Length: 407
Image 1 (tube, rainbow, N blue to C red):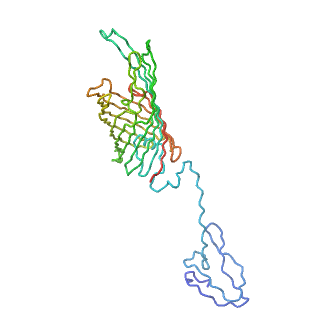
Image 2: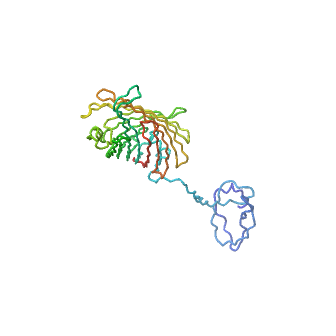
Image 3: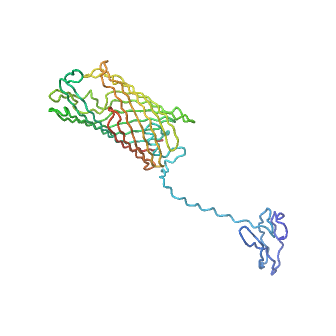
């Protein structure tokens, strides 16, 4: 049977009984010579016990060159042990947040773009952002009592008032991805404001007055929708609608006091709100070219007229705003951003008459950075500088957003 080809050994059968004490040569055991090479080698004869020999299963199939007998079945191979992976230096998201198709974290670049309104959260993703904002502004006001002759000779008095204002605002902003391409946002600020006035600077009647105030500011809510997705040179386009509610103390409901020998009228405390409803609409175009993101934004704000008991009908005037920005990712944990913004406000009307000099032009230049602390927390720091007389001198802002999957 050992001399027959392996192809004929398809069905095992029992051999004839072997007499006691008879020794037969066994099959040649293969010897390993090199990698993948097998040659036959001599095997010492083995005594066989009397009795029938149990049939041995023979593996069907072709036999390689040089084989002299049936091929023994191969032992099953052990599965390879998993190789340890090198530890990653990136923070890994928690297991309960790593669902398929869901964003498990926002990069520092995305955090800055979210605050600028240049991207949206996915559905079910929520972000709570705590912000501390400090703004300082100062201005000089010249009061002339009398009249001039030939534009050079003054008959009367000149008084210069120096005004300094510091505003510290702590706000909480909640953002939620409502549906695909739709995001809702609500911002609730708390304002602490102090005004320092130097009346009659440089005169014998120079006086200093300090007015403070604190309380809830004006709450605003925003809906942002993305109607266009970038394709080729065409950018992502996001539209927004915002409403501001006058929940803070406005200057028209704060009592006034009379100070100084000339009887100036001043507010008893500093206001924390504007006193007007406001409705804004705007759009933002976003171009991506990794690692940079460039965006342009424009908007319009309508402030309806409102009547107050001690001031009559006040129309603050409409506003137009424009801004450009650039965000660059330096690494997967750090990004920098810079931008320019400008806002024009038309003159205020009181009882249908324009107040001369009440229009404003507020232009600012800003620079900031965003740092990823963990998959859920980031740190955003920015500073801006006023470029026009109507803008604040400078402002400094620190924000800590926390993101998670709500549903």
